[in-house]
Length: 502
Image (cartoon, rainbow, N blue to C red):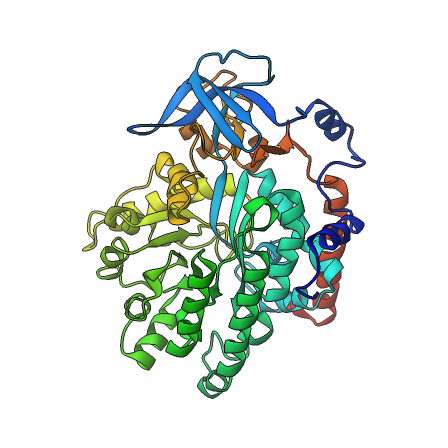
């Protein structure tokens, strides 16, 4: 789709696909009832059983907190009741947190790979087929995955779309839905990446450099087109795939574009042993040190995975740089891997929880980050030569909110305090399976028994996107039906190719 397309026609086009903001014709009675009772207007007082409130000494859990929201901002926070005639939302059995920020997503890639590749197959082919979708079908796939992210409390995504086409789709859906996003097309994108990676084909890689430079320029133009759009909720980044798929020339072009956009860089960094070995062989140093030598950390950087990091050298260096590590506990599927979360925490690196690709359940990923991090620390902490710290629920929640906001240079995000943006999520911590029938004494610990289905309300920029468990940005049934139909066609093609028999 041409970049000259006006915002008005873009929104109208999404509307034609049935994905516009608002619930035009909810199919479910419960969703209809919740939409009817959602507060209208731009002023509301939220009365929470528990809330993580920003105080002069740092964030603190407080009981019986009132949060006064006017338009896109929090204007007052206090324990007890706030006077006034604004509409009140009673969340006395719930925990209210700042909206979650995922430091690493590939939104459109989630549902077409989930549950089909774990442990036996590569997810490459489903992603290649997703890239071949027309714009309408790609938007349906994006919408399904973005609805899941909202449903689990993720109000902001640092989004590395797997191609520029997918980044455009993200903006077409996220913009009208009121989502906060830092999108970028991955460079090299899926159409070219797998011709020379992960099994590195050096001649093909060398020949691809002019095309990579062209992709960087196209993504820069995309970023300039949409920077600060949709009431400043969309702020594009630059997203080189990884250090082993770039050269000093291409990363210099990425850095120049990122400085022009002003929003930072997002990449996979030291994601595995193969990347580390390739960069060492080509440039004589490991990925983090090489990126540092090129000045990449002159701008904010979000880096994912780091399973191939030099844990003796990289964490202390990164703690001194403008860097946020996105650990992704469900990367590679539900089983995932044990990433170096405890070592990064111990070194003082900013650590965020990233979604990656296959799971869009942010609450589940908070839980997995804590449990897997504790398992890794328990296995290596006592005998390891590298400092390690066992992550606790508060570490993960702060990483999902305040820490990520700091990495984005956004002190107005990730905090419940006066003058912060009204990005909020409420979670049932009292009911069956997650609670005990009463408001718990340590609600962050109850998150270890929760998942995204316990999220009850989500607000971004002062606008409700989920209210009383009902999705308000679109007809949930229609989003699910259209997204499912697209995935079914991808699966049918995979079945015809014999992919499931592998």
